Every structure is written in C-alpha cells, then in structure tokens.
Length: 294
Image (cartoon, one colour):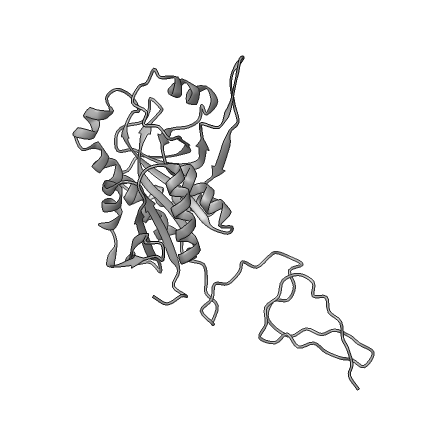
C-alpha cells in the first residue's frame, strides 16, 4: 500500500464487533505487524479511506498497548473504537448507539476512612469526528443515536443495584453507556499527538440482570451492526486531509500572521541580499543570519 494513502484505523474488542465492521469494507488484505498483531486493510467505497481493522480482545490495558503499536506502525489520520456497551440511562433501547463526546476512566481514586475519593480521568472525542457524527446522524435512517459521555472500567456490569453502578451514577452522572476498552484507545490516541479519535458503542444490554438474556437473543449482533453503520457514516463525512503535490499530508494553515506560505521571501542585507523560499513552505516568522564569504 502506498505510504501516501490516508488510513483510518477501526478497533474492536469482540468477534461480533469485528465482523459487523468487516462486512462494510471491500478488497480486504491481511497485514501482520512486526510484533504479530494482525489487521485487515480494505477500502470504504465512495471515500478516500483505506480502513485498517483490528480485533484486540477485551480490556483497557491490552487496548492501550496494541493501539499504541498500531498507531506507530500505520500512522493513521483517525481512529475509531467501535463495539457494544451496556446502557446506563432509562431512555436507551437495545440497538441505540452512543457516540462518545467524552470517555471516563471510572476506577481512579483513593480509598479513605471517609469513603472513596474519585480522581477522574477523561478524554474528549475529537472535535472533527464529533462534528462529522452530528452531520452524519442527521441523514442516517434506522439508527437512534446519542452524542453523550461513555464510562469505561474493567468490569462487566450486570447488576443495576451494584456499588459500581451507584459510583458511576454519583460521580459520572452524565455517562450514557459503560464499556471496557474506550479509555485505553483514547489514551493511546492522545499520546499519539495529532490523531482524531472517537469511541462509538451500540447498546446491547442495560447493564442489569437482563444482560444474559439480551445477549442470548442477539442483542450484541444488533448493537454491533448499528455501531458499525454509524462508524462508516462518520468516515464518509470526515474526509481525509488534503495531500500536497508530493503526496504528503499538508499541515493545517494557521490564521493571520502565519507567514506567506510557499513562495519567495527576502531578507535585507547591506547589499540587498535575498533568501529564496520558492517551492518551500513555512509558518510563522523566519529568523536567519546572512554570512558573506569573500
């Protein structure tokens, strides 16, 4: 694959999530990284994206480590974590999709004699991708979607009266869904620098004692399929960044005071010496020194 092709990485934890996204891609080829991590790369029709799809397994720690590796190897423009989650709010239905405006890591804190003191960590969804989701969801039929925060913890929640559920309700009251991997992916994307990232989760249960029955009736397949539809719709709206004539990604231009861009500039010396910037690109003031050699 040419290095100049824009890549969107889509990560999943479970086979049902992976299969839902895979069904929407074309021309798939397997890619094996140096450490043995396997992905499939394919095309998303009607877009400029090459999509690299991976199934990482469960848990935030594994997700963070493998996401870091994948981002380092593939240098994608954007990253989506797509899968299923438990719903935390009464207005949610099975098959609804939550687009994560924020991801909370819910287990950080300090236990004291006075009780548990939360020490929250959170990561905001990429502004570009959240905006793309807002636009895409206006035209997407058959999906009930919510742009809300998502809670992430290393726990499968199947009891609406549990201490964990009560902790989330009191400390992360605006969270709409709970899952296990979003914080790992979000943190790895944050450490990767200029990488747009977003967590998209379909509601497969209501984080209560009915989870097992819902899963047995196919709720995970329904939720994963709906989340995959939203992920693809977001990528269709979120076009790759423009490429320069040399095939490399162009940096966004700053606003006023950013310099002249490509072209020619001059530095005045006592003899009218010039510095030629033709064919170059620069941002901000340019500082230099002219040295004459006799």
